[in-house]
Image 1 (cartoon, rainbow, N blue to C red):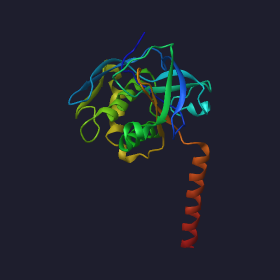
Image 2: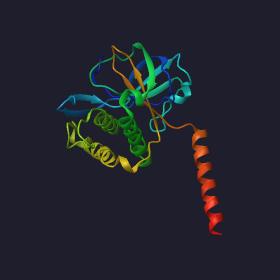
Image 3: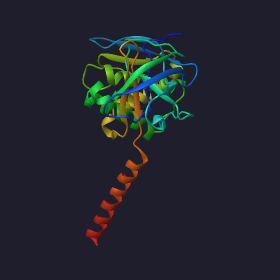
Image 4: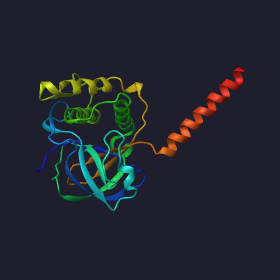
Length: 233
């Protein structure tokens, strides 16, 4: 089985110089995948078929525990969840491939990497439901950010349109589209990295900030609040 143009954004916390990673994608993370209908023009690709998060395993990569995503967590420290970062190459489930793990800003450019991060934040902030339909919709949202050629993101406008193949799954796409149209309301709380291979589909990986980072942030906000209260008194 070699699904083409499938989604892959997972949880890895590795920035800076590229690292070698051996990846084996085993299946879709939510079983039988829902289908997405992607209609592109003016340089944006078109695709109709299975879409959604993948699950896989990795070896010889640093900090495997960092590959856990707070949105779609994997059970094993050596497994992770990922999404499709490109619609132009394919891969096979159950086959190991060697990838390089690099920074998403270099791959997508800073604006799109930031918007991808905001999309993950929006999903987490709104307790978005990740099931087969939700996973397909979220993957479509990732493609919208990566491939849209016009200003702004909207499944119904611009050079890339996204919808569910099944009307019953369309509400999930409508929810993701509301995230896309309001990304500016959300912080870029996730780090975006990409697994790249010249011959096979690239995967997008989104990592939650490390607990120490959140602790420092919360601590800093606490100090600021204390200083403000002191000034008032």
